[in-house]
Length: 369
Ligand code: SF4
Ligand code: SF4
Image (cartoon, rainbow, N blue to C red; front, side):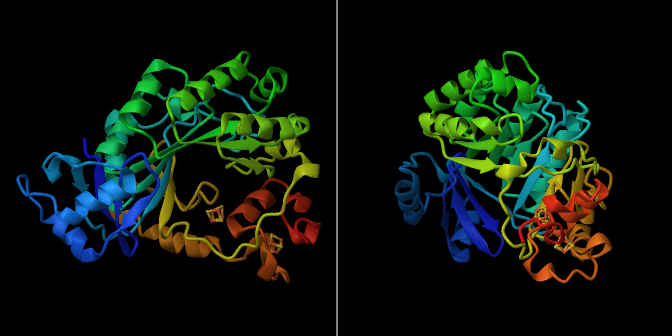
């Protein structure tokens, strides 16, 4: 399999080494030079130099064996996230996915979806869930995404990370990032949150395995009212492993607009979000659910387009959908604080559908004021 990818990325061209987040920007002329290479051609000297300097790589085979050149896409998307399956082996009270059905596309559908994302221009792909690693076709889909020339990030609860097939998979194809959630610093607290006996031990075994294998782990400390008393200990656990971490304190309603997760909010730990200044959801990135339904992002799921039945040509509609979803209508219309609002309109709408706990998201209720 290729060790280098040359690809368009928005208005730039990048050289990337799968499994490593850093890239080298190259001029269009050099991208075209690589694109024109055929089997027996020698790699240009600059490619040898770039690979050695950026990643310590020695290219000793014909470049076509080492290099995958991604084609330009007229759709111009750069990133996507994909819930391979919403099924999960944990049962956290605050989960924003609501009813987590164990279902998704069959293998043919998964392949079709990944090719569609490739053709849309997606270079950076996040595979998430549910718990992504327990989908029986996770490994095959992950390898296929690599084959298609995507840089793959995996988000997981870490429950299966200790298992030999997963370790071998990640050794063969290193994710450029592996994001794991932390739910507690002791078995008692962690398992109270996950409602899964023995899960803390499996999580620590997974962390040990990831550290031994040198995987690029990032830890997300998720604070709820059940584990807030262990925030400092969870941060200490992250530091002990030497993995970078972030602390997340704000709960959201479920994607179906149910309020249940908000009951787990540790309100004393809430931190104000940054002022919302716009985002590129639906324009340069999109989200896909287990059935191949694409939306502007994980929050603004409706309206959506079906990438399996409607195909790639439907994707540009997401740009128009994004424009309409960001209009401050409904419960936000006529707001006098919109210029300093910290909550994008799709998220505010979700809170409003879930019963409008304004103190959790809106300056008119005290949040972030
Ligand atoms: S939740 Fe809001 S800020 Fe985040 S990607 Fe979606 S629209 Fe953008
Ligand atoms: S401050 Fe509240 S009402 Fe105003 S735009 Fe933001 S979420 Fe909507």
